Length: 232
Image: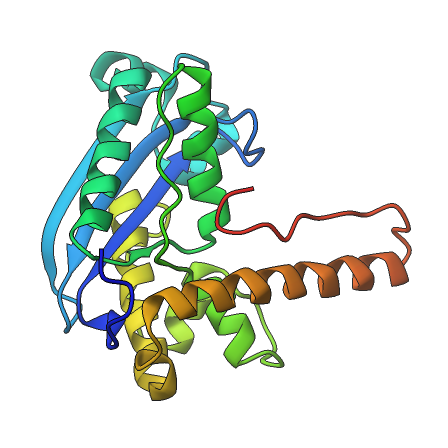
């Protein structure tokens, strides 16, 4: 895999999960998307999964992504088989030299790691070229007010997201946001992707330290958060 070439935004792999919850150590995959975008954000490849997570999908989660326990059981692929296929798809993308884009990558990649461990599967080798638009946007536009959700960040960069919390729509939007950030900050586009990956490791740690300090200074003296990235 060539991690030294510039213009990483020209062709990107994109990845997103929808799950049963927010705790990366306990929640399960419900839907997934792995795709490839071209330089103009066009979808070149796409693969999607509907997964039976093997547990009840909480109503709160179903209301977000639209998949009920009943549908997942009736139509979903077994979780171990789906996890193998998702890992294989991402491994293939990395082997082809494609950076893997995921918005809040530490969430999706950590869940995938925990799911592999849950089923005794070989985990995804930690990619050396992950692009996380959330981490990068916070680094290059640190003082912008407002939310940093995918929907809010997509709107800020002029990227259309019509079906938020659909794994495919979110993955494609994340890739297009990454490309929009590269256009807005062209110096980023010329950084070798391995170097940009390394910078995100540092940025995420610094962002977590700053947030932890803010929470503690505002009454939550015991608050802790991890800045590990891209897998916690």
